[in-house]
Length: 242
Image (cartoon, rainbow, N blue to C red; front, side):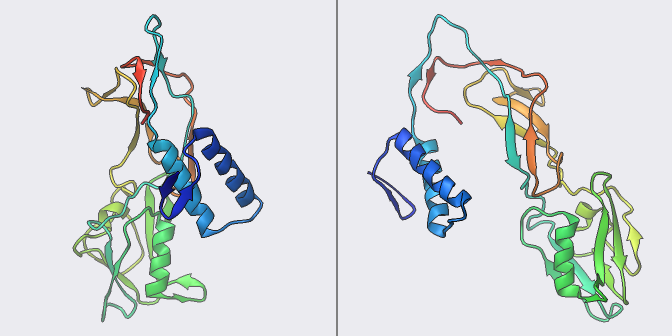
């Protein structure tokens, strides 16, 4: 019997856990969803990943490992406690409000939601908003109705969005290249079973690398290498994979 996060499993067998997972996912696909189901799915996946395997390969053979397919949602955290603040005014600079974004993954559209909440709108248009094309790294600050933005604050958003640490009183195209990815420009996929991977001239167990922002935040990254690079295994005994 296995336990996890308030969930009790009557078995610890891989195949039975997988069968249970299939049943839950089928029910969820049909619209039968609950917090308990999400919790149980997480517990089963965690249990399967925690299990130790021990399999010995044929020592008379040579083995290599390569990545054929990789998929993950782009949820890279580009805003943290060191770059999450901005001040705004909607009364021509008489008073300013400090906005602190919660750490997480943001595009400028998500930042606009905060600006709408704190800065308001007139005739359906935000008093303060950003617009642009992140693929071109061009962002414009739009100011309406006597609004101002002050980037000269501690832990400012200015570098992320490409603006100077100053007060802006009129709509302005960013003077610098936006850094919306916050210097996180590579996803390195590690695997503990390989030898021969390198990163910045140092040997690392990296099986594949790809750019971070191939898709916007919140979208799924799907990577299928045109040509798979195979690297030798570092052991004939496989106890775990991570």
